[in-house]
Every structure is written in C-alpha cells, then in structure tokens.
Image (tube, rainbow, N blue to C red):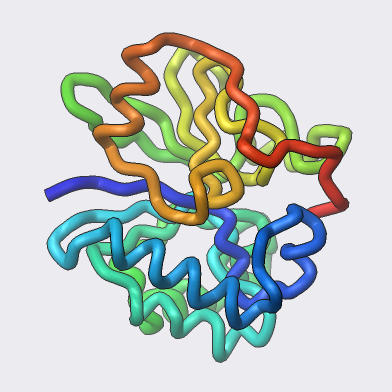
Length: 205
C-alpha cells in the first residue's frame, strides 16, 4: 500500500485554467484529467492526502467527485475548502458534507505523516511564500522548526523551495505524488526546483 499526496485540484473552477495556465480546453476536460490522473496512480487500498483546495465551482456537483477517486482519502483543509476552520462559523456543518462525499477524514491545520523512516509535516500552506506577491494567512501557517514540509497553495510558483515540497497538481503533472517520490526528493536534499511551466501567476485566492 502506498501513500499519495496532492493539493489544489480546484475541481470545477474554470478560472483556474487561465490563472495557472493549465493545459485544458474547459473545466470539464480539467476535471476529467484530474480524475483520470488520480485513479491511474492511486489504488483502492492506498491512502491519499489532499492538502487543501479540493473543489470549487458548483460545490454540490464538484464535491461529489471525491466518491469517484480511489483510495482512503484524507482532506487537510485549505482556504478554499468550505469546511476550513479559518472560515469560522461559515464552516459549520461542512465537515460532514465532505465526509459524506467520500473523504474518510478531514484534518485542520497541520499534521505529521510517516514516510519510510522519517516524519514529514503536511499543511495546505508553506512556511513562506504564496500564490500572490505577499504572504497571506500567516496565522494558519506552520512554524519552521527544520522539518520537511509537504504543502500546496502556491500553485505554479515552485515545485520545491528548500525543505518545502509543493505537491499541488500544478507542480506534479496533474496527478498525485507518491511517498516513494517524496522520499527520493528528501534524500536528494534541500533544493530549489521550478515547476515545468513557471510564469508570473494570476491572482489565485
């Protein structure tokens, strides 16, 4: 059984295609590619962490896509997820809807995950950096105490920056990344790696 990581799918969000220069003709093509990329990688008995921003658009339609995806699915909520605790009272009742849609667990803040003989930190937000030109949601970010961090939120800004590994779909070829791939990146040491299609990003909230 493998463990997989992804983030920032933005299912149903048509504007993300232009914001992040995604190579899809429309939102239906994007959704289909993300579903296919997931299910080609993740087996039914695998675990998969979504590090935030799973579905937007018409949420009643896009959230249920979770039920089409393989594996034991854990959502670590991001700022675009309706269940995100940072939304305050507006998040009330949404965790149950994400669970009903197909997630086995919903986690908030950050968590620790074992990968081989090491423990890594996972969070929607990186220690530093943003999809905008200034850092937002400072109070929701993890504290950098030297741990490797898997995150999303920055879209195509970078694939890796030091010990921060962006597992968002814009950095991973629109498919989840496996624990084996993460371990290889960590073994290679801290690096700065751009995404395959890096440019000045649009304003992604």
